[in-house]
Image (cartoon, rainbow, N blue to C red; front, side, top):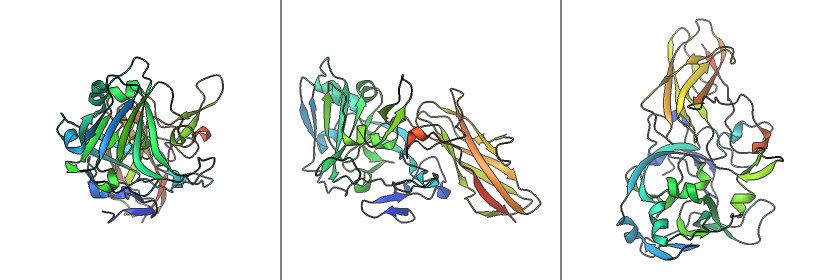
Length: 351
């Protein structure tokens, strides 16, 4: 399963796709990055149950077979770890040292969360939907709760009803244990901490959820109000990443080199990717590949005529979304160790 992936941590298991291996719109299951907070739980499909409870008129539980018998849908969605690119932050910060590859795009098949919420008979005071995974352990950060906790995140009711999928297949195959078997949430357009794996409980609540991974971890400082407020991470930020050349790669002088990568956004479609070879002094339009698809990445390429003279050169890529908002040049300190989408230059040697 982990062949070819970069091991960032063994316990818990955290594996990264070498982004230079990007070769298509769909990331193969065996190449998809793996993010775990605790040990991977061992779950039997026969014994597993999903419960729906809380501010509902008719709480219920589902078996795996019952879930498979429900009407399904399939969507393409890009999942990105909220700490992707953390290794590039200066000064160095704590957390899993992800490079470029804590991201992937897959085809997900499952049951819309809205179907289960409709069946449950939502009460009029329903506000949020908590997703609880079966993975649990002790948190290694402070402040922290005493003893073990499970991984939980909540969603506003509007988002939960709109497009969240409870997936049991990934690229047409049954979910593997590392990717959340028997069931995981797919929250399109949001950072992947919201796409809870090993799902076992759905709790509808009438008040904001302030669990550890909602209010202390996976948060940032929001300045949209009169004073900075700690807020939970949500939408993926617009960004482009370069797959090839890699940082430090040597390319032939006076030749045509295919610079390529992927770009994505959680709030809009990618409408433009540009590349610069002079530290942002000028920008050239890259070619966007395929058709735009909401919540899925867009591949891009640029045929670079390399200089005839040997030397070191810097390449930068930037994406612009359909709202006309480009990637930021600089990093916002209010984002802590998350939401990393400022421009990331790479250097290559022309020889």
